[in-house]
Image 1 (cartoon, rainbow, N blue to C red):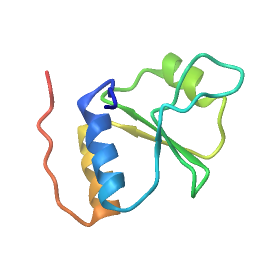
Image 2: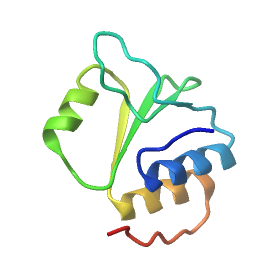
Image 3: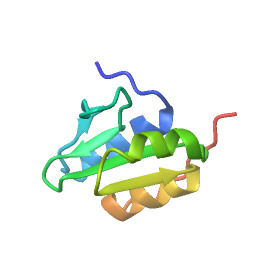
Image 4: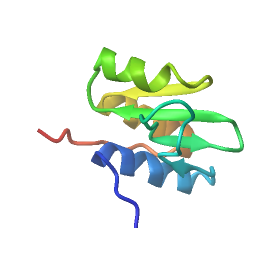
Length: 95
């Protein structure tokens, strides 16, 4: 069973699976202890999902990879899911 750091990550994983997009959760990265939420091997693209913007942490994570997608916020996750699955979703923010 995969442990997701935030419920938004799980929603993105489920949407990627429904869209038949292969993904790897938190793959090891060279030269850093930080991890990126997803790697899409067929596209050589990384995805990081955040519920809010944190510039220092995001910089530390994404500065070690090229070809990345940063999804920040509940509405952004809704839009991403809709774009890849063609399904309309509404996500209630976790407070």
